[in-house]
Length: 317
Image (cartoon, rainbow, N blue to C red; front, side, top):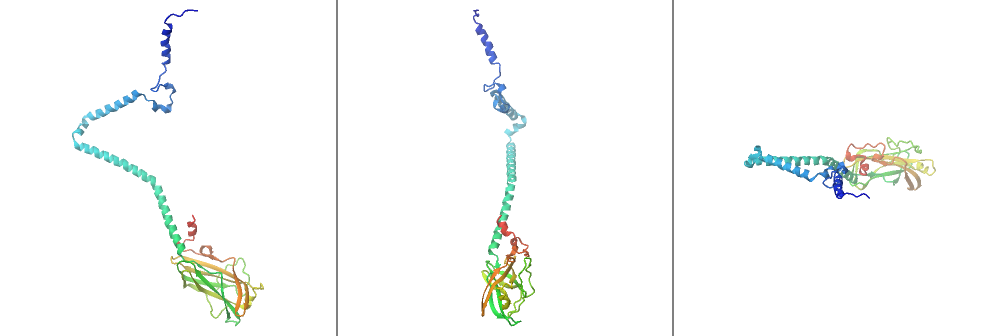
């Protein structure tokens, strides 16, 4: 075994230490080659920070000692000017931030204003709907016995009423009632339910169509609006299927808000049995021509947003 000279290990040791310490280390004791580029700001050395602060102190000192700024220490007006400039600068920054915040809030303000506008419209519409006059023709009819003034034969006058279920009066009420005399045939599906010139059978009352404005129906009240007479021999043919007696008509009126309204109605006599001056009879709804306002084909709504035919639909949105 070959002997190693004394001190050889001691001479080799520094070389190993030099080899291990040759890789640069950061202030945190890690190799610079292992740093991540995204973490660069976290690895500033203490000396670099101290050098940066020293530079700032030197700059501040040089500015303060500069002859252009020496007057600041002795002239109060210069301090006031600087304070004024600082206040103006602060106010400008504050104003800019305020305007920026206003710009951010502008869409929200516009949206809130639109929502408030819709809420006001819906509130007014709900008030109109809850308070306006609403006129309907009840299903039940009254029948009165009489003698036809033209033929002298037994006749029956069917009387119609209109009922206002609203909280305000119905104004400028107009009525027109029709029948399918004298043939009394079954109405076809294509029948248009147009108004006839006048009542087909004259009775002692000689009821004629009325023009708008002839009457007012108070709130929660009922008024007689007219009637038509039919001879008894025609009514007796109903049970035999040899006659089909129809009554149809229209009620027009205006509410206190200035909105126009329309109620169409139609009834068919389906049963009639006389007994002296009394009779047992029944009437049924027709399959068509029973509607109110926008549900009627010929309805013309008032040009007013409060009278809009879409108010109920708008409230449901």
